[in-house]
Image (cartoon, rainbow, N blue to C red; front, side, top):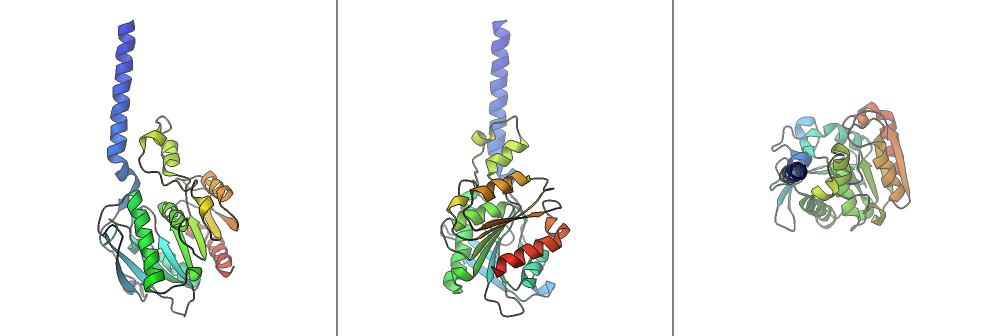
Length: 270
């Protein structure tokens, strides 16, 4: 009997160790879904743009697009996209932000689009800082004329950036409290808070931002429940607001187009 129990315990330990090793080895593939190369440029989409190259403090060369509005604008938005695709897959968002009167700088993280390197948490934070420094130092944009927008994974990158720098406002769309919280929800039978190396711990950082906050989140988001948005809203300093959308994780801005545009327009005017 004791031998059987011992064998069972050994089997469980070996199985757990194997799962833990699998999680550690495959974690980047579970978080990042970059697409290399550019499918279409803003020019092909009828937009003026500058193809921008910049370097991070750890020596990675990044690519981005600066897309000026057709009309003179005194506000620029730094767009930090989600974990899949690249900057050539967000033209519907660019169109909306242009309609709202903004200049746009869209950045591809390391490993995405034409940017060099491989994505990881620390690297994405450095990428956002390089983009911010480019806009402020090289283009001479006043931080109080700069909005920072994060989408999905980009919300964690945007919040981390705003713990260190100033901006006119912060927009978070389809965000989450932390990568480990999401991992635990996806694999409730595993101790993901212990297994995961990536944290993206937005919830414990958002109280340190110093900018007005707009959160956009859908009740039907299939990846991150509304609880993520509500927890972030509660933890963030004022002024802050939440616009509740409907639709999926990737199309709520289309399904709730009127609410989405109205919320952003009011936020920008403020």
